[in-house]
Length: 250
Image 1 (cartoon, rainbow, N blue to C red):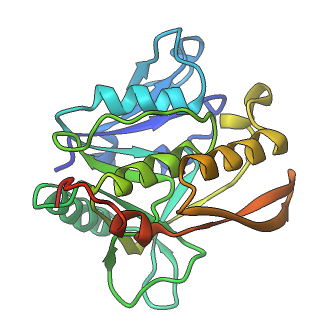
Image 2: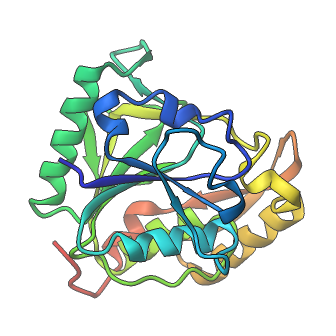
């Protein structure tokens, strides 16, 4: 079984979508990771309080990533619904789905896979339950005994940088296609709290991502969302892994 699941959260004490949707046996291993001023706002949920010096989602993820070293662990965004894409249907995962998925993920991580995660639900699934080497968004699992230390230089798009950094260093992953996540982008709270994220900050982070991964990430145009015109990225996930000359964890 996965040792722990961490949910970094900010400004959403009354809207814990991910946590509230978890089966009880998954809640038993799940901890909200919160800023000190929110430590008493989450009722009887288990919380871990960040040091006062840790600010921003990139530094929060870094702190969790380092804390979880030498465990088999997961990290979820706080606004997710986990879905079973059963053919053309998309239904909320059952307790049985969760048990199967987590047991299988644990098997991956203890039998030659460095990290794993889920595909976004609006993206087309493969014909298989999961694939080797690909994009992971919003929900991640790691073998903390083998994944390396990472740098966290950009305040947003830090999750993309995290996944690409691992792939480029030769650390393989598996991506669930049958079990996907639906997230509510740019909702109140989280990185949108107190102006932590706006369209200029997002686009600046995307350009930093290109600088950090120039052969892998390209800006290929613009797309509109409710925040404004955002850079449209093309990311060569499999190329990131195949281009490595390092041995990593195979």
